[in-house]
Amino acid sequence: MRNKTLKKSGFDSAALGWLVRFWALAAFFYWLDHTSWFKVWVVAPYARLSASVTAHLLTLLGVGFEIQGTSLTVSGKLFVVADSCTGSFVFLLLAAVIIAFPASWKEKLIGLAAGLLTVVFLNLFRTLMIVILASRFSGSFWGLHIIVGQALIIAGTLGVFVWWAQGVGQGHSVLPINSRRMFRGAALYVLGFLFSYGLYTLFLNSPAGSWFKDLVIRHAAVVLGLFTETTQQGQVINTARNSIRVIHNCLSSPVLVLLLAAFFILPLSWPRRLLLYGVCFFPLYYFYHVGRTVAAIWFMAGGRDANFAYNFFGQVALVKALLLFSVYYWAGQRKVVSIGRQLVLLLLWLIPAAAIALLVNWLWQNFGLPFLTSFSAVSEELYDPGRIVSLMPLFYTFAWMVLVMTTPLWSWKRRGGWVLAGGLGLNLFFALLVIVLLALGLAPHPWLIKSINVALPFVVYFGIVSRIPDPTYS
Image (cartoon, rainbow, N blue to C red; front, side, top):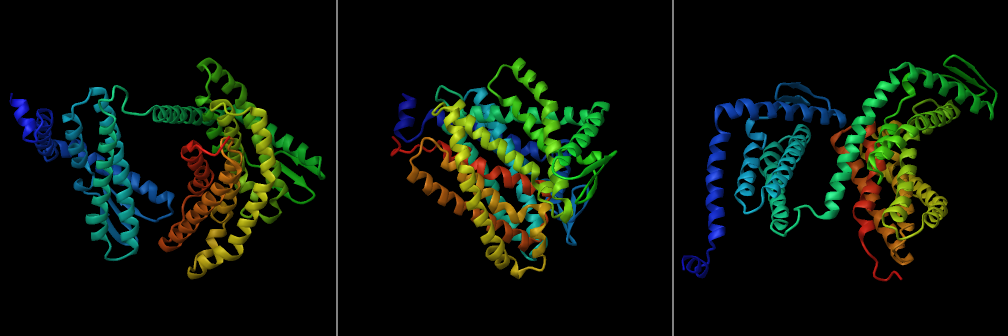
């Protein structure tokens, strides 16, 4: 009788119970967040960690700084990651909502993990944004810290709760099937990366690694000898065009670690994955570095900084690997076309896509970049091949056009439309990136730019576009 009365009056006993539990937990967490031991053992260490991670991110972006404890000095301005800037109570408040919510503990743990990751990453982004912008634009600190930063954290945590609550009580996991696969694949890839990085480091520092490096130098000289007069003396290779000393430190590449990590997500049993990993480890190292050494020496006449092969060989290798993955995606995973047909279609579009990409790159080099950089005194830095900024449109346009035009479930009209829309979007992103780099005076680490350059078209394509059906396709 009481429940009926509550429902008639607009209340539900379950909702009322949730509100009571929430306010009780919120009060407890508020007290906990203000206790001295919690601040000493949880908040303060996290504040120091947050300041340290922010400093590393500033290094990646090429921003000079000084750090001492939780204090960062950038462009002569002091910023302190205070206890209130850690987002600890924001997460505790979200935890109170999730724990009080009528859901299984498995679902609650998923929600708590998602909430914690969201608060951590958004808080790091907020701190980084405030430090960079407030150090360059006087008077912006208050607005960034009080208004923009807090709005970002509140919106992010609210979004996580809404996303999590929508999947609760549906008789299945909070995560959709595709999300579970995505997270599982991402976790396996990270595991593969860490394993490959450790193994690769041990290999490079071992006698076997030294022997392989000397083998690469000898065989690179042999390959060059097929095209020009070449002699080798130890680590020095002499050609008719130049004389280059190939140091052992140059015969290592993080690209190989990225490629090797992909073996961990192959749809094979673990014994087969590890067997294939072991069989391919040494051939991948050998052929990659022989090819890179030959190409770098052949084009070394203009110096290392202007050497396309030296700076971009790894990025080109990753693009080729990801394009081959697109063949596997449609033929092996989606099973909508034969692998032979998809591979032939890929090969047919390589030359047209390269031609369009070169045209787009020429337009940027001759018209777009000179206009965008005409207002900056550091515009020449954008043309540094080691930063790859000026060649982003070439990579974006080429990869995007090949991916879209080889999508087997779309009509040709739809493919053309997505080539134009995606191409314009990626080039607009490039223009905004250049403006931000120039406006804030940033000099990002080369591998940060290179990673974005290679990954962005493929992330957009495989994460969003390739999943959109075409109703006109027959």
